[in-house]
Image (cartoon, rainbow, N blue to C red; front, side):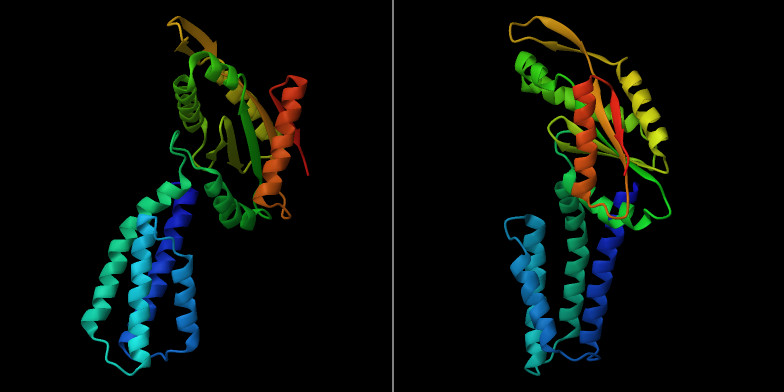
Length: 269
């Protein structure tokens, strides 16, 4: 399990635990029902999106909890069976949230984490450790991808993206993460590396990728062979960084690499 998956699991457990403790207190009559509870759950109801299946189930759970609070406010009895039913719903919701989490944070085509996952991972895991651990962010852009799409079609382009994602996963260490940001743009977060080490790793990655050859069919049926390659920008992470800031810096370094016709350019802050 990756660091990001572990983080998400911990957040989910915190939510479930807090909700169960709250309902246990209600069940035992050990907590008052101040107005802030109603406001909090009303706000949760407004933020839930009923068009998504997991959010719809969460919305129902919020409504049920609001009903319990309202009845308690009127002095009506709330049975243990009702509280237990709510807790059972929470356990069922856990499985739905797992699937919904994957849908939100995974790239459908390649199976890599997406940009939303990068922002979460950076804010929750990378940034808090920046004073005691070195991180490098690598922005990768495939060379000639538009030509492949135009020549061989989008199916060939999609196949290429999946193959490249598989290549990244095979070559990354367990503590590193790969993300597909958009189109043929990918980001790596490397842990416990200096910029020099990150640059050497990217060059080695590029050399290994040069051994990978693919074939695609032209629209007329003729088979053509091509080699995969990329341009990369590498930057370090500092305490003042936001996800957008570090991505922009690495992106600028990548475009400089393309302009100069080299494999990688690094940009230190």
